[in-house]
Length: 211
Length: 264
Image: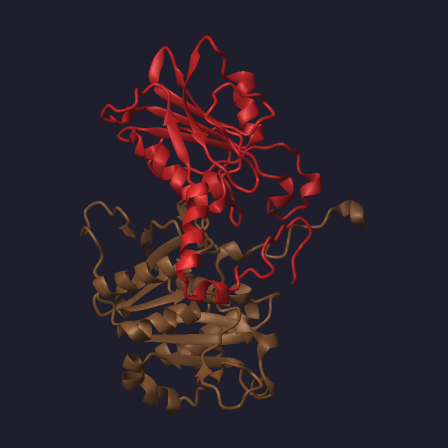
């Protein structure tokens, strides 16, 4: 189909999956297989500061910084995180075709992981380094389970992520663009000054950062 | 599922009683979605809310219908609802593909929302693979319609007046002559599922679809939206109808960026 250099189209048609597969009635066997796969793909969020068994109070959080993808995670490792000011408070355990994370908090930079840190001097400041790929069917679950543990009133969320320059849509060619460069998206509730231009149409953000 | 926009002093949730819900199927060439973009952009519809759903791939960007600097920074996500009370029209736009195994949950939740918000009828814009047409379908108009039995009673006559062609049913087992005829909409995404569910739930639904292939589907979108307009009369169409539709700013650069000068 017509596409342009730099666009990666995953599905054979932009319409997505073959609907015949979807419309077929499920046999009890199919249902069982689907349930098993869903269980395997479940996202588990384990907060290490909570002792198991007691009532789960929501985490009081004023600022939540989420770094998604290896580049953003590496940025936090290089410039922000250290063992003096930050402590690990949580981990996400998940599996999909691209990666598996474990519940260990002792990770190497080359591992796939998703860890949560808290600023020791101000425990309401939370940071998440998510270098693993969270699949489409897991993104919503990740979102609900992570944010579900938080008290959201007065919460400011900052999401850091990277996209290939080849995906950036602009009038000029991307060859002449000075990269890397920053762009931002913000909700209307965010009143502070943004440090870079806003993302121009028709560019979009997808997957976990969008969720 | 439906979350209304916070409009400050306005009513808590918008009232869609008696409205026509216009929506696309994510289908071949994304024709339904492009046609919906034209409707929202031309009628300058107001966003009244969105669907909070785990059935679609998440995406976010800035206002795709921006006309100036001032209105270009409103965030826009994968399933949003727009309304035009003067025409009793509510429009759902879907901007990303469905996640595997989520067709049925989405259809069920959508139809339950249609019933609870008391929409009078649903019009679904869709498309189907042109290469799957049989010999007869290759001739004549590439446009088809379908009506649920409840809507057939109300507007079936109008379709006949307009000389529209109903989507043909095909043999369940091609090659064997005396089998049941079934509805087959290849490349139509949720179209068939939504239509059959609406039939059994007693919902008034019309499907308008065009046979097409992947490629530059802008002309297909114009053909489909004009087809819709002949029936619903959303804009005046005496003169050249295609020129009356306003292309949204997000349609820029559909086929890539500018070329590097070093190429030449």
